[in-house]
Length: 163
Image (cartoon, rainbow, N blue to C red):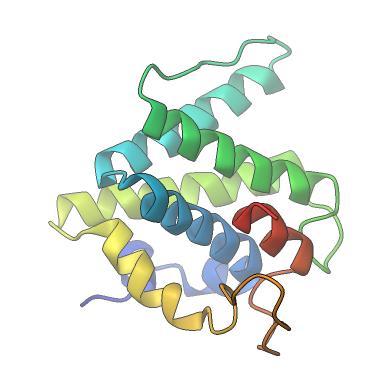
């Protein structure tokens, strides 16, 4: 199985934006687990969010809604993560600019497109690579969280798990 970074070739970007990329990838994995979205639906969700944010940055208030509920759920989940980071609630590093976060979305989009061109199941690759770092993320309700090497901020964890 190939490594994620081989799909983009940008090790420095992966390191610099690890937390944001990780949480965006985790969001796609969690939506996939709930709805069994396809790779094409994940790519479309990323493209829709990127385009909506581009249009919004031009001052046009328009939000495209996909008729496909799987795509829309993935788009909404990704949007929620990005907005948390913009507001400074996504992690311990403060807030990020829209331009920086849009760069992360475009990076993931390019990775997903590269995976498709190479015949790689992008969401399965995410599940194997990101999922292997999720020890203690989905503990039973009411239990004490396992101390892990800060894979995801608690507030983001609660949002992703719907608590």
